[in-house]
Image (spheres, rainbow, N blue to C red):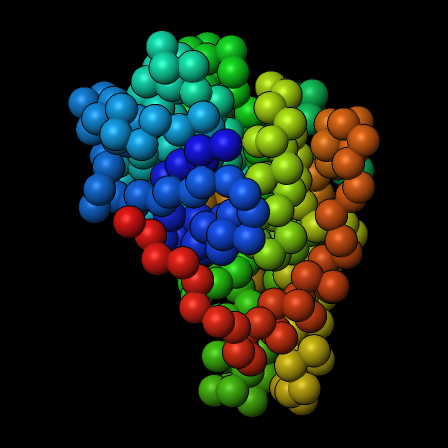
Length: 289
């Protein structure tokens, strides 16, 4: 297959290029400097140049708090951009795999969230991402929506790198303990996305590492696995207010993925260990064009 990665310089885009380099697929990657997903002309020109069989869209506005005051700009990337991509893919017979997020849910669930659960975003970022999902579904039959959560990988920025830095700068860490999710390493997510595209079956999929922890538990694991001894104090969300509300519970049930006969992604702590080993010395990833 010819697979185009849009948003190829982000954490997941880089990992996808690295993963695809070890397969028989022909992979290309472009980022904001080369393609503006808000512009039909720019997207159409790229697809006509690359002629992919599938596009994986990793491009997104991910500054969650900034989206609260810059909602129109975030919406243009997270909602209008996917619509433009889907409408460009339709006449060219291209499969679109579009990345989405746990923020489309309100965080009030008490058990892993099924793909069929009704979204109810509480932030500008979540509203834009949900609108992007809806636009893709409306414009293109040959689509896959892949929701993930608590993502980290490559150079960052991400929670793991932040905790490692702060653990070396401070005598103690204070981390929220009443928000729950499944930390997900791009090194496990990227191969699953490639497999999903290979299968080509349309629909909505949740893809995260297995297991559940809080941000506090994740921070404690990062410190321990890195061999550091900084204490990690548990605090509540109210002790660390942010402009955009965070879901209190965003554990995603990966049922649609497993219904395909695919194995669950590895446990989140296994992903953390692999990532920390990677940080100790990984060969360069393929360059994006």
